[in-house]
Length: 466
Ligand SMILES: NC(=O)c1ccc[n+]([C@@H]2O[C@H](COP(=O)([O-])OP(=O)(O)OC[C@H]3O[C@@H](n4cnc5c(N)ncnc54)[C@H](O)[C@@H]3O)[C@@H](O)[C@H]2O)c1
Ligand SMILES: OC[C@@H](O)C(O)[C@H](O)CO
Image (tube, rainbow, N blue to C red; front, side, top):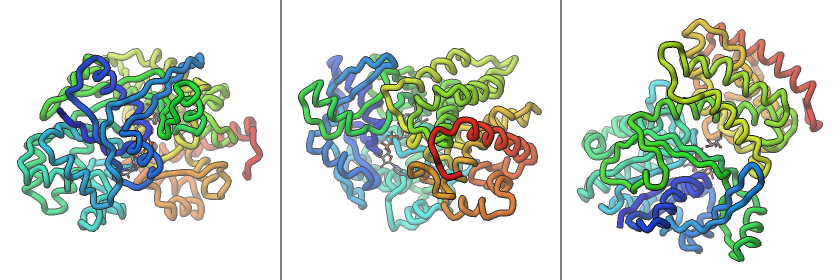
């Protein structure tokens, strides 16, 4: 039996990779299973429920027409209880039968600067580097791989499943930097020789499951499942076929194995993820709650549509180097997927982690457009929306809690204490990297904030503090 150890047993993994593997098991190939664990004690009730259910749970999918399906997923065979020492994770990860270690630790879980080097200013990274904790993906994998090397347990693939551009390469760069900073040259050399990190594009909108999901699952299946997940029907996974020690027969279940994931990930990140954030920030500013409500507001749909049409498509599909994907068709499909009312995906979930999403999803289009001497008006709307959103958060006037794994609250509050808050926001190196303070960026975002203010004044549907 071959094992995939998955770190970060959130909703997405259980609606995506675990489902692909379950598809394979259903086809009669039982040669792989998943062992799952978390690096943080942040979803204890779900982890306990999953463990009590032997790793099994129900996946509910729903189409834009409201057609629901229910299916029991059995590919996760073991759930490791959280333990800050990660002793169980290390034990499983160091076994020769574990051939793949995959992870979803959110966009904010990588702590990389624009050169893909570790940003050691983050307390979690600093304490993992000092060896006092194992709470980041780097600290955890350094411990697992050290034990694997000690036991001579063989090569292993490190498979990133987060929404990160060149997600395998970036993670690898962070891991190697982590080992170098720790002075762990022997392990670093072992990792270079014995691991691969295939880039991958992952896609399936997976909201945080609400209590209604469990109620529907029980009504439909009779099982009082304590850990169900819910997702859209659409699913996609594109992987560079670069595995160190074998892999499941992913092609047999529709995973696309490609030499380069680049066009897929650029399209996904810039078209889907950036417009998703745009819609979430805009909808939040006018007091809405769900993505489908926000994308139904013509002015919001237009912002996302114009951003993709005016700025992203010309950047990704320039004359002389045509993109292999039909980006206009992709834009339309994505906007329709956001309109699925039965998903009830929250603005709160998608608006989260702006301090990772501005640099990851939006900055590359600004950079490309400015480098080509082209206007950035449509893209500037996105940071202008986030700036207004952050202003609401700063004043305590958001109608939900904002979660951001990377934002330093004092720094973000500090923008609004400055005589020119917008300039302070546009000068933040974490958000803007080499574009921080760029005069054209500041001018375009300033002009866009006036359009955002006009949009809010015309559309506010909920009484919120100004
Ligand atoms: N939900 C989706 O629609 C979707 C779709 C495609 C990709 N993804 C990717 O999956 C990620 C997780 O989404 P989800 O829906 O499973 O979220 P979730 O909130 O259900 O789970 C988040 C997981 O990440 C872990 N985590 C959070 N911060 C961490 C950190 N700094 N270090 C280590 N572990 C950390 C948590 O313990 C948990 O296991 C997203 O951030 C995204 O990159 C999600
Ligand atoms: O944009 C937010 C993401 O979590 C999104 O739901 C996902 O990337 C869709 O695959």
